[in-house]
Image (cartoon, rainbow, N blue to C red; front, side, top):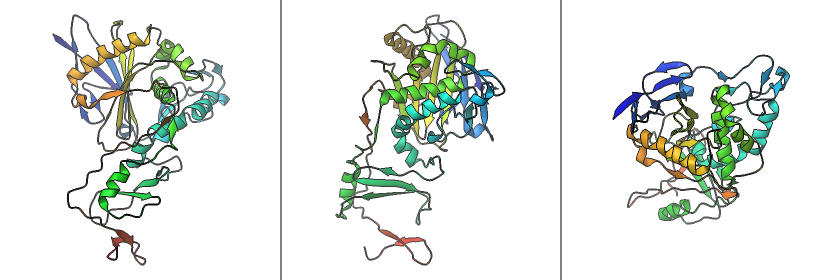
Length: 353
């Protein structure tokens, strides 16, 4: 068995090695069964750039990479974010996405993908468009991370208010957190898949989008497919709260591996996924085989990869958001009730509670 070093391009800067969201990943992808796997990896990490990064043609008449029309520059007046601004992206811009397509994506997909990521976006203090902190409002609770300093430690304060709840027993707090009712927060999973594929298409070289015309048709339609390729998902603690994307672009004609694999990090959620319906794709089953071929080689080089689980986003029905948490409370712990001092505005222990 031999190994081929991947050449890494971070938006044009050549590196030898993979550095993906502070996970320790090996620099080699292995060659097995006399089958060479060779990928160029584009990593879009906002911490690497002080200003905005513009992808695509930006001046004069140009072809929209989504609808395919050649339009004058007055049809490209909106700042089209390659990854939704609602997910925290302020730097990566797609210059060749026309205003009409931009409005369609915002109207049809953005709400669903924002709800899908709403809990990690809130917990990792990713601000809303208006700069305000997010609040998760369910049917029986409200919850928000506070940007105020904790009065006794460096741990951020998580505040929640449970409606119609009187018991002050801390074990009931834990029980309540496990049963937060988010039935008012719903999304269409397949629209989330469409949105994250749109992000990859916005950041890849325009010429590569020609292989994904059926993908674009699917994204821009109101119709759904009955099955889609698998997605790998994991959650890790990380510094920073802006989204990061990596695109693994195959450099040769070896069709035993996918043409493109996308990797997206939003807050602390990491996704690896294949863009379906390329001109090399014959079926979802074949796409899954290709993804497995890539994943097998990738996992040989990656650390903590066993934390990734399958994520199903083929569902075309509106789905209730789930809050999956296991609050840990030390045995014998007692609640500490805080209040704001009327004069100083500081949080202090409420001795009367």
